[in-house]
Image (cartoon, rainbow, N blue to C red; front, side, top):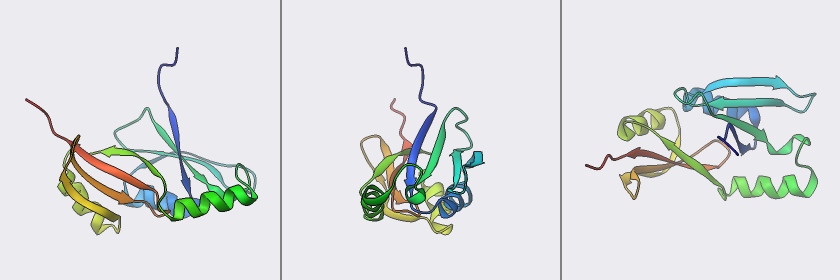
Length: 139
């Protein structure tokens, strides 16, 4: 029986830029950065408070996984913002929104009440978009 998900992947256009974005703007930690031949790195990051999950930043154009027409199609889709990869949680969405905005993170939706709590939506440096939520406790 499966017990947990330990790694998830995000497709990125440039692994060095993505590393900078996730580390210096979002404040994530590097877990692993191992050179894979001359094609790039096996690079995983994680939110500082979530030790059990690693997010692999996979460059589309390395030739390791994606080549030719597939790499071209994926690149275009990521650039168009066709992927919404997940939801990140925070304790104080307004403070986090202000901090990330000051660091240059592009938000496409300001914090507003939503189904799961207060939600904002931002893009990473490749064009992938994510929800940022502050859960509202009932009761």
